[in-house]
Every structure is written in C-alpha cells, then in structure tokens.
Image (cartoon, rainbow, N blue to C red; front, side):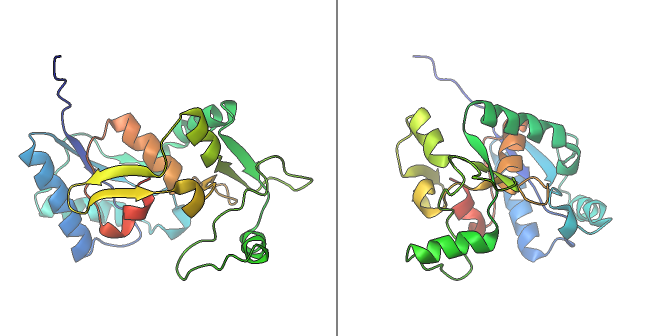
Length: 221
C-alpha cells in the first residue's frame, strides 16, 4: 500500500480579551516551533466569537506581539467574527441530519433537573445537560441549539469513550454523552459556541496538529 503523507498544518488561535501573557506566548512559540520542525504551515486565527468578552484593538495588539517575537503566520489571519455564515451553514447541516435541536432550558433549570436526579455538580464544571428538549420543546421558546451527542455516536457507529493521542499526555479518552451531554452549538444570546466555531474553522483550514494549554484538554473530544 502507498503511504499517504499529510502535510503538517498547525495554528495558534488566541482570544482578544487582553494582551498575550507569558503562558500564551509559550503556547504560540511551541506551536510555531512544532510547525517548523515538521516543515509545515503555521496559521493564526483570532477567536473573537465571544464578542462581549473581547476588547477593541486587542486583536491587533496580539498580532503585533507575535510579530515582535518573530512569529509570523504563513497565510492571512482569519477572524471568527467574520465567519457567521460558515457557522450557520454547519448548524443547518447538523439540523438536517437530525444531529442538532433547539433547547428552551435555562442554566438554572438544567441544574435543578440534575439535582432532582441526585447528581451533584462539581466545582468549576457546567451541569451535564439531561436531554430535556431532545424530543421537543414542550411549549418552551427556543433559546439555544444543542448537539444530540448520542445520536451522532449511534449514526456514525463511534466507539465510546472517544479516544485520542496526545504527544505529551499520552492516550486520552472521554465519554462525551455521559460527562458532557448535549452541548451548546449556538448560545441563547445568539452567539456561536466555541465548540462549533473551532471545529468548522479547523476543518476549513485543514488543521492537522494542535498545540495548546493543558487546560483545554477536556474540550478535545
């Protein structure tokens, strides 16, 4: 069989909520070095999809910080705030497959439903969505859109828990249906969720490798 070689394409994707701090610069440098080591491409994406948290002008400051350190992208920078049409097309495709649905639940309602089932929420974690609106809104107004995780797993015949290989941490795994539940794709305030936007953009840019902080490990699956 002929081996198919995939060219390395990495990316650094900061959110413009403030200037880059030391930890962010370390991640950027590591990502840039990894791309250079593999004779690949290094891209920069401004993840400003959460507009209320973004500070005007910080995107340009970040790009200036990177340039000062000699970290120049190999292709034009893209801004998530300019890619709403792509995210809407992705959501529409998921809805058409039956993989996404509208949700009318507030955060408190989700927490109350979990409490009634005897599930305590751990500190610094969101309550796992119990699937209240999975089969219909039952008279509620739609607030957000969620991914039907179990439906996706069943239709694609995925093995659970999902596993992936991290070069530093080794083999990782997560049972998304159990540990996360049907997560949000578009928020109640109309903003696109990170989990949708980042996947659409990584696919569009052909990203093959990601170097990022360990605090984002649990978002991988």
